[in-house]
Image 1 (cartoon, helix red, strand yellow):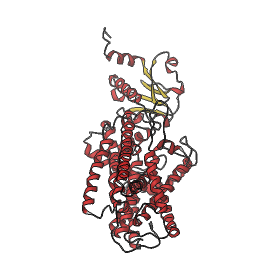
Image 2 (spheres, rainbow, N blue to C red; image 1 turned 90 degrees about the vertical axis):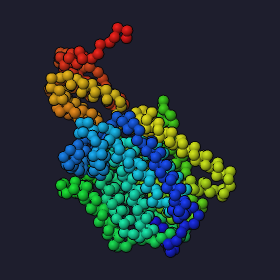
Image 3 (tube, helix red, strand yellow; image 1 turned 135 degrees about the horizontal axis):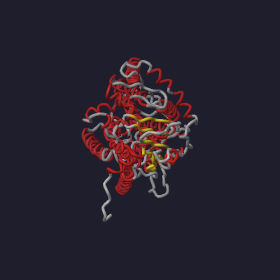
Image 4 (cartoon, rainbow, N blue to C red; image 1 turned 180 degrees about the horizontal axis):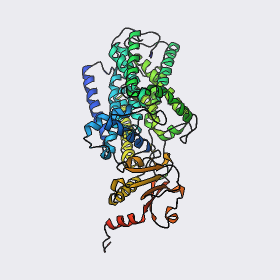
Length: 546
């Protein structure tokens, strides 16, 4: 990928803030990365089960059962994303010591997203000579502290892996440009294959990267060439190596290690249903400003103000410097322009697509944070070496970073289940735990035990994540409409169906409670009268003094 000007000088050292050139600077930067990785873990790892499973997390969890227990996985192109998440989760399951699928915890499943989030922070190290030490440390700090990055690093979905592999692709392309070593061509190919096997929206990232490369070259020809360290361009042999590795990685994963040969074809077929959704045939249709409203200024009623405008301000400073060439060393202007055009292109693409879910903003937040790292360097240098300016900027930057970290902790813990959370999207509310615990407790005192028949009556899109929470029960029926004979010892029915099964059954079945599954989406629990009497008899009796 061409990311530079029209001409390139011989390889040599970068001047000024050289990042990876001085051994002492390397040591300090390495220590900074160790600290940042620790901070990233501290924000992402605690209390991974504080938030109930989201619908999408539950779907991914159910799909992994066959892979973990029997080594079986079949990619489904309709409604589902790629297989990379499931295969990446396996090592964490093996290391967890979990007994079986029935006892698998949410914490264990979410470890893979935590690992991807921390890896994202560390991968910026590969760009240290493109960004400089200050910008590298700043970008890694923002990746570690960003509320969006932290929140979705605790989510068992595909997005954090896609963003991680995207950064690996950019970094390996840069390293190949600097070294011309075939190993980096192979790494770039592996990253591309993993992106394809993670989520079909990888094509948006690839298109944005191509556009960024073309615009960077055009801008350099217009404004004049900039010196770049190292040689540019790809040999046919290295390009073939990268594409071969990408094809192999994708083929292995989509065929489930050559046990499902239709997988690669399905990876193309999947674009038909997704194109229909992107075109507006979906309940997830939002205006172009949706992501900015969540990322820059989100202040709903009875909720704090949430904002990552600090990142955007730094990114604007980096954008201005990249386009004008002011405030940056000549050797780094080319890469800064590439990141600028990448940020603009991918942000415009995701904003233009009507189908929006909040975690998709991670894809353009990543290059925006790289640009913000560049902006940090520019602002620190704006008044030259004047101590008062550097002290002022250090205070402002530290305050902005601390504010991001504080928001990250609150969104992932205190407000993890609050509808005012900017990254809260059709989120399951904690009431689901009460519902499913009650169902399992009733089943335990039934003569049939876990073989007790349970009917869940609701459209499929509404009853998730119940399949995850009821997975220990062996006879659960999932019905998308009220049948002629809906009765079973236990029934969970969408309240909007107005089933009235207690009246219709002459009280042979009782309505024993309403439970909220998602905000303003309620389910009614019905239990056979005799079974309910048996269950109530097992409950502790209230004390006289209560």
